[in-house]
Amino acid sequence: MKQLVECSEALADPYGYAERLKAESRRKIVGTFCSYAPEEIIVAAGAHPLRLFGTGEKIRLAEAHLQSYCCSLVRGALEDALSDRLAFLDGVVFPHTCDSIQRLSDIWRLNIAHGFHLDLVLPVKLNTPSARRYLVDVLTRFREELGAKLGITITDADLRAAIGLYNRIRGALTRIYKLSGDRLGILKGSDLYTLTRASMIMDRRRLAPLLEGVISELERAPGGEAETERKRIFLSGGVCNHPDIYTVIEDAGGLVVGDDLCTGSRSFDGLIDAKAEPVAAIAERLLERVVCPAKHAGLTGRADHLVRLTREKRAQGVVFFLLKFCDPHAFDYPYLKEALDREGIPSIAVEVEDRLPADGQLRTRFEAFIEMI
Ligand code: SF4
Ligand code: SF4
Image 1: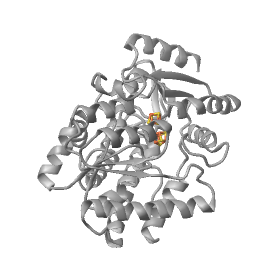
Image 2: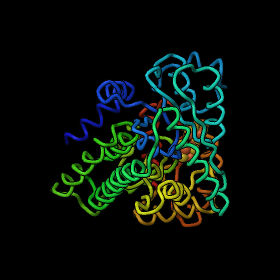
Image 3: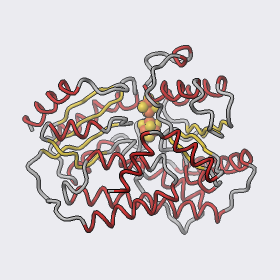
């Protein structure tokens, strides 16, 4: 599919993609961390949000600033910045979520000279009326600060246009996930990864019609069974930098039928009310979408969501995909596993750093798991 080729090319060199976009469109490039960054406001400001994950280069310069027990995402992004691979950025936005991103923000402010630096101090507890008021205030201030940094005024009309664009993108990704879950095999798990990941990198104005084109092709595509001989696997966890995980699972006799990853379905979960006051509507989505482990909205929200999705997708087993040294996800793992155990849903945890364990080793573990379920 030609759309997948275009997305894969962007993923192969996200920084090169952003630099070319900047040269061609004269848009400012704003680096972001985490899906709590209000990208709609960045797009409304006429800038391009680029989610930073690090390129996986060897960590040398970042060692002097971050302990080796920080996650590879934070260390890798800092390494790229210190090595001037991110010199094309016009600014960076740090939503205050996990401890590692908060500390990265401080280190970045003190050590990286290029571009502006904006912090978004989000509420931690999300399910209170005061959190709602506070988040609207934080986003309103962010809108003003970003406008000042870029020398423009972000109007309500700009925000509404950006919200409309993001609703198209999130709606399209939701539809693509649904189609690939209903008609198994019309899209590989690694292709879903490619499309979702591209939604954090590519020009969003290009991406919306591209994803809609994918939907048209999938709807016309022949084949796609509702049932499969393979074991239906659900992926759960945080940031996944490893498209190969899908192939390893498939080679072991499984099929990924859904996920709740930060770089998967949680990144596009929930539409924004296009008729409401725009900043309040953006806040509402951030408050209402399924909570991340660095936030709080009740004691069982994440487990309830995981069990519900696993049931909905008729998954026979769950693979917890945990990034090494990612404390928020590691702390949540025992309670999520317990919730699955109570429901009789088998699970396995795989901890990875910036590289997957040797293919054979992982494959053997998955084969044993898939045989057991
Ligand atoms: S776990 Fe939360 S803080 Fe971390 S990347 Fe995911 S959404 Fe962001
Ligand atoms: S949530 Fe985990 S993976 Fe994301 S930045 Fe924090 S520690 Fe790293």
